Length: 296
DNA sequence: GTCCAGGTCGCGC
DNA sequence: GCGCGACATGGA
Image (cartoon, rainbow, N blue to C red; front, side, top):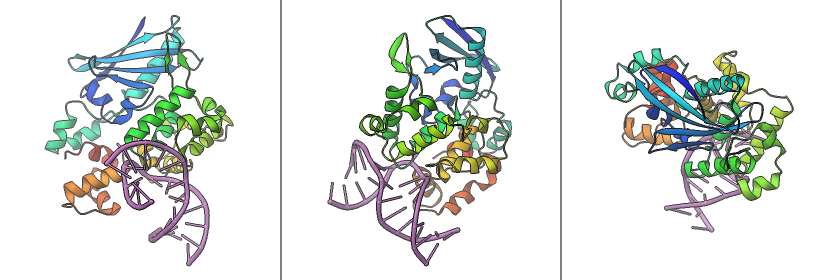
């Protein structure tokens, strides 16, 4: 078994960061509570499939993240580099949140949550995977989201050779090639499957590039436009995806946020979207995180 | 049976 | 730009 070692400066807490939102519950992620370990089956660019087991260790001013890699053959240096990049991407170890921490420190109750090391919300190694998962959160319950993603991975993803039950997230090509009947009879995403297959087809045929959206090449406004041009992605999903890309200036207003703001700020009366925005407006570029860590 | 869940699309105005 | 019904699925 091989191992990678990554470092990140505090404030950072591994468990609180990984479990900071629901993504850790979605396949091929899996959280092992007893071991404080995040597992993930990952398909490398060359098609090899490995199992990653990640956990954090306190190292004083920083946290060391150990990544155990199970694979059928020893990994090349190039493969190790690819995994190192992907893990840093998933855990957002290179994101600069210092501005947010400065603002957060002025709010006692929120700072209590954030200062221990929250903020770096988990994401997938690819934008494609995050888009698919985000579409699977719309107009449904979280429980069903988990089921949809589980079935998608189970039916379409490549197996991990040392434990074939465990599978990687499917590539756009694998999603595009799957027959509609499989979606209808097994994966059961309802009307969402058409959106997801259309997206996969566009990617395979080269009519769209998603991964470039994380390369910091577009201004946020064009980023949002690009996201909303995906069928099935409206304002809520686009704002969620902006967060997953690393922009926090937009709020993903959904039934949950409405319920939260209604209770905390509007004495049980349902606020309009404008009123919700006004609550978090002072946070500027950091509205999403401000709400996410807003104490009840 | 009806309503709705971490919404969005396509239509008509 | 806004209002409206339709949309697959499963649970209350």
